[in-house]
Image: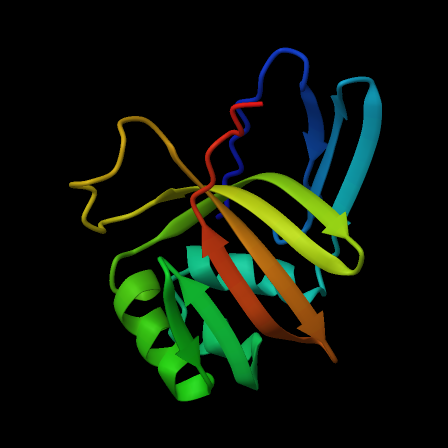
Length: 157
């Protein structure tokens, strides 16, 4: 079962719901007086990707990617389905990574998903507290063609 946790500043309070199947994500919130609602449909490749990650299902995760897809994670590039499969096996399924989605943004046809990451990966050099990573997805023809995973920091200005 997927569990979605949200901890947002007081000016960004969510009202969210999930309807069966649990792969549907619906987040509504107010951000500085601007309403935004984004839904990942239960049949979307991104909802399938997140569900597969949380289920530690290597084949289902890999099936969400195009054959010539690119993943950039921690400043490393994984080109093509075989390299992506090795990354998934070792660093997603092997480390039992889970995602709790905190924000979904549609940006000119690309989808930005912020999520709280947890798992059995090495946390030695990470700052204390929750690890929130931003996932930049590009989808074409029902498959992920690009996934860039970044730990962003707030801008100073």
